[in-house]
Image (cartoon, rainbow, N blue to C red; front, side, top):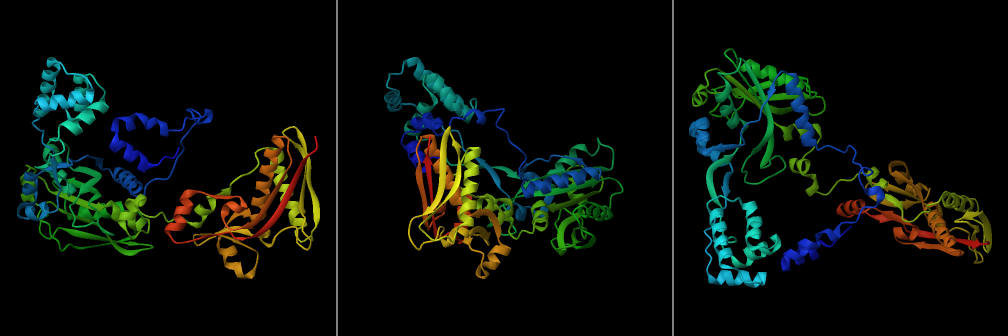
Length: 527
């Protein structure tokens, strides 16, 4: 069920333990059809980045490359070994790994009294000593941080919620902790991992070695933008062997990228000239795509023997890398990598067909006879729409819930037509807006270019009337259902799903289903 997140936020801040125990109250108990194995999940849409990752993996494997997982955590000293004089510039862009130190928590009489007050009982001397021992064990890393609450709950013979309250109220040392940085970094280039991997296996594996890895890298950019993220995926490979040359980079580029529809290739020197590559070997790969033309898609080069020597690697190594997000942007015609990678944080650009699927009847009959009644109301009203009042037309006669029911459409006022002018309007979605329009030249573009919902004002009003008559018959009563001037979707029995309404408001579009409907349907229970 839906719940108010602000209310729960306030509950949590005022009484965390109470709010935690109340949590299950927001879960709607499942009905019979919502229990496993009757509830099922079917195949859904994949994320464009991971779709590209999976495709790259399949292509590398088909080219004879073995998959490898390189270290994500790289020591600062390895950066100096790999990049030489460039290391400081590289380190300016890496994330150092930090953590909270373990506090030395002192337990004086004041802390014991505060704990006793929270627990509403007096702590025995043996428990006090056990509490000190437990906190000391935590300080020495004998107890992990995520186990501390549970361990203290056992010592104090209380539940975890009370312990959380005690840590928050009695031991401010935990809140005052400041992270401390280590000399370990998150991998900013896949190259950092390749040196370590090859250094470990090159003498123990038949040559040539062909490995690939598609995984995350992390760069401390000044700011993220349309073409830059602080964490991205690198699709990287290495070929190591006695006879490996720069020509292998060209051949791998063509084999890899031709699978993505690129036809022609162009190789040109990269001006960046990273020091872990041999001089004049760093090469940019441009490929010609049938839609996008010439685009830069990859970089390759030969690792410098100076850098290889730091890891005891004694054979030439070609390395090729490309950004998965870059490739996905081209494949999916995206212009902002942030929106492609994290669409949940951007307004969803819902298309007209998706919005049309979100338009439903608010109420409709549930029985077979009720559905037949709705169709009959619409048919008779359409056939006699221009009849002048007062008038009445038989619509349907039959049984609903075991009761004999007779239904008519009527207009009691003189000189008024049976149906209002808007009854014939149909609902279309055009350029992000939901519009109710008649079949007229003024609305030709909406009707020809928009997406029809398959719903007319009269169809929606007829479904509403049939549903009301059905419910009245269930109670043994007749009823009069009137649909008058429509100003809002609910006035003509329309329900628009919330995600579609949000898309419409986010993009400053509109819902306009106004119009005079003026349909009256009467039912009588005769038995």
